[in-house]
Image (cartoon, rainbow, N blue to C red; front, side):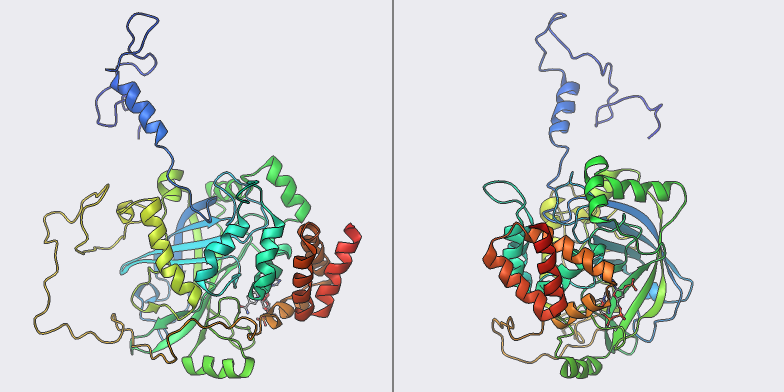
Length: 484
Ligand code: NDP
């Protein structure tokens, strides 16, 4: 808005004076009729929307996705329709456990949420900077997050609570190893990779399903902060990552990521599961590169800062349920929970009609019969607000949009795999590829919080390190001893 536009109320009425309230006499009291002052104070009281329960502190930017390789054998999604094709995007990066004002350099995974404004609707790929997650079943998520947040009595973060949870959930060990490695404190958002983390699916023109994992490799190179530097920056520049991303884009130094895919058929995954014992839909596991090499797909560039942080970043409402025709879900239990959880969070946090806001609105024509609710904007205009049913039936095929039916087997029940599944080998594989210095940093980074936890919890967690690799457990014990 031009600075020359005269000041007005939100209803457009010119404001005579924005400096002095209307008072009875020079000293007051203030008259109730000073509606401009009242509106100003009322709106001020309502400036905040509920902060996200997780991923509250974040930074966002617009950009473009460019296809560099043909993946039409796997997906018919139009955004991948031709090499060179570009799709506008929006990205939001974040920390996870801290509040809206918390420090950007905290040891924490980083959210890596991408939106593609495609001609067939918005596709949201809402991942992290890690290829795996702490838990594999969404029913555990609120409990897990409570341990990352503040103690209900002291209102303090508590390593005891965190490791109490992790030590009883050995499937967390893989992600805990990443979190306490050097990559647990990335140097801003530009110098980290991103992952879709879950297994997703793709559907091609022939109606065939492939399963996929998404990778976003930073072209800026991986750079991490040492634990000491991350802690120092938490004090002197808690907005370090926001400053870095916003500043880079403002000066035309646009960050880019190579977009890559791992692809497998259902039969290939079934054979791999028999060979390795790993469930390909378990988000605590990666698909090893040697088994499923990555293939190039395109480039993701961020090249425009938002004009208004609240409107465009705080109100950005992602949902992994938003997939376009040619892309699909997988049976991953954690993903299945998120398909419900994100949209529900946005309904609470931003509102019933959050998809009407510019950052969230589809950039293609859309039409449905959802109407009304708070802050409805165009609201379907005069169009009919109900569906007429097809008297002869609509004869759906598979899951719709050309997606084939998904064959499932097994009894509906609460299935508990804990204790029986191998939650240690992949954490060990990661440990073994670290350099000697990176291993020592991992030991030291773990020993700091572990030196504060109860012995019972410590012993249980040390047992998990031992099972991943005896040298892992030994290293953490030595680091603990060095601190004692
Ligand atoms: P590879 O040797 O083919 O790949 C190792 C991967 O580990 C690379 O992607 C590397 O990223 C990444 N890496 C290196 N250091 C760290 C770290 N501190 N935290 C997280 N990732 C790191 O091995 P595999 O594919 O057989 O996987 C072995 C282990 O590597 C896995 O158990 C997993 O923990 C980790 N990994 C695997 C990924 C996968 O999709 N297969 C993806 C990311 C990690 P870079 O190339 O950037 O150095």
